Length: 64
Ligand SMILES: [Zn+2]
Image 1 (cartoon, rainbow, N blue to C red):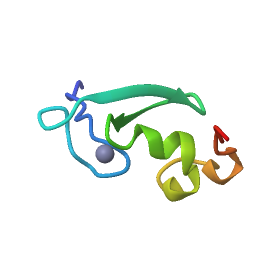
Image 2: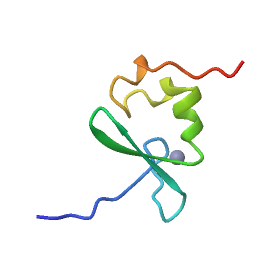
Image 3: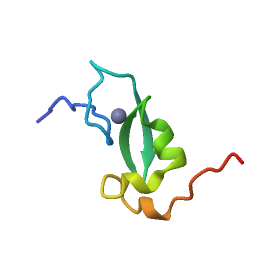
């Protein structure tokens, strides 16, 4: 059984018909996040708690 996977941003739920989606690998899974929310993953990963496993263990990147 094959099913087309719908790619949606883990943060806002928009799909690739609305926004560019970046696919990344994490915890042996594939996840998608849109270009608008990619910085959230980098700078405020705690906002993705519940949307990514163990995201609270990620350290925000600080450019200062
Ligand atoms: Zn998004």
